[in-house]
Amino acid sequence: MIELNIGPEIRSGTMLMGLYPFPECRSISEAVEIISSRYRELAFELHPDRTGIHDSSMAELNETYGNLKAIVQLHPNEFWKEIKSTFKPSESLSSFELYKEASREFTEALERYFKRNDAIVNLNPNAEEYVNLCVQLKGIRKKLLHSIEKEPGSVFNQDAVEKIRRINIWLGK
Image (cartoon, rainbow, N blue to C red; front, side, top):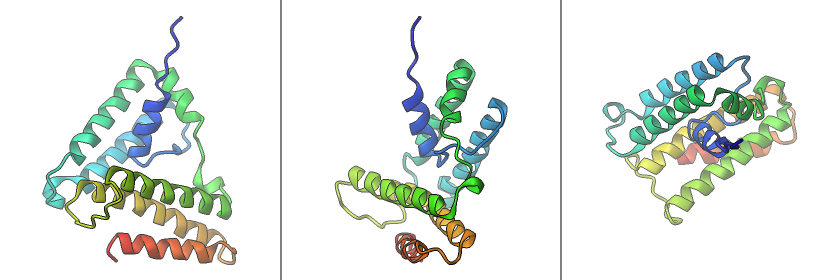
């Protein structure tokens, strides 16, 4: 029997769409709806008519979405096994776990950005990599804010606020 190793493709696709770890769900059809919903959000946010940016962002998003849909259709059991192993519902996370997860994602997003751009900071709002980074940073900022709201007196809130301040600088706010 041939063993499939589509886990890395599922992980990279869900990461690109901001769905890693994958939100908790009960079925493959619910997972497909989560992916489709996230695709619609990102397609709206990244669409060239909205952003004025004509680059490969939309093509990359469409390809990722198509690949994930194909995996679900052709290998539903492997898909379900992979995403189920990443379930981490935000509501069940403690304030510290949420902060730690957002901090890790913040570091990884910036590392990916600099790796792709040879350590050149390009804050041009029309640059593809910057647009992708901004999409990721908005989700991370949301998690950090949620961690602060969950436990206002946490000792980690000062660092969370500092990360939010740095994210806002990246976002031009």
